[in-house]
Image (cartoon, rainbow, N blue to C red):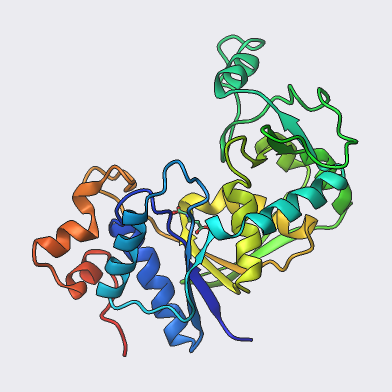
Length: 292
Ligand code: GLU
């Protein structure tokens, strides 16, 4: 089986050292395995994505010595795939429309238990289910202009007692990781799979895109470990293959905080402007020189 991995940045800001580490690590592993390295531009959030950031991504990656083995896939070109998947999930009764704002959710979860911290999932507050039985679900197509949530319990019911697991590889070898089933209703809840303002959500598109690009190894930061459980669930529900995952360490700033888009001071473009070379970036993130 050919090793196929990808780097999937969102063009909503400059690439920083954390992105460089993720991209270089995936690229190095693909080259060492004589596999394929693919690029995906996660521009599904058209309100925040900018063409200039996309151009900068290509430019920074090429400067780092990274080459990709097929034209980049752009999520903004894949609306039909996301729409078809949503339609199928809707027809199976696994989605419901939701009109709650963040504020509605915060109010609903904080009211009953004064003082107690409301439970958080990978996407923020766990949805209390306000809209779960509020709108008709037996229409032919989902309503337009509303968010669609996955009915987590209904999704788990389609899987039955089947165990779910994924394989994680790391410096110490491969570890099978079980994904507890019942736990997903209380630790993840009814996640959004289609947002009101654009088709698809991160979780839906990433799973469909990895399947289309035939990704065998997903290499990404530890911050996405919890999201992986959601992705494995969606793969099983939609009958898609589950890749092997590698969750790498996070590059942190001097205060030990994880780098984010706001960390423009660590933007690759700025280091380039200051005269650093690609091997200096490798050294900064603790990677050896590239093997050619
Ligand atoms: N687009 C995501 C990000 O920039 C990465 C998605 C993934 O690796 O699954 O954080």
